[in-house]
Amino acid sequence: MTQYVWRNQYETVELDGEWIILNTDSFTVTKLNDLGGFCWTLLQSAQTLPALLQAVHEQYEAVSPTAEQELESFVTDLMQRGLLKYAV
Amino acid sequence: IRKKYSSPQILSHQPI
Image (cartoon, rainbow over all chains, first blue to last red; front, top):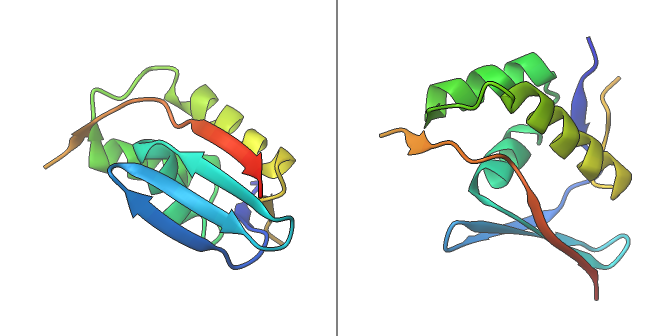
């Protein structure tokens, strides 16, 4: 099962329900919404998509039937922006 | 207290 984890250690700040990630390697600032930030904090340690989905179900109500696809898309997006890597 | 679900999103991604 594929696992994902932060590529490096990042400064992360929550402000008014939005999460701001400062990437001092590539000098970028990335802003996430509330659920994105929740997933991001979990991804500080290696996570599979099913594990993320379970955590989301435990913390959020009325989870979308398409949540798994949305999580996969979100994680892929973070990978492409250089913030996540495959955990080995 | 469980929050209401909204899909995880990257709101912005900018170089500094």
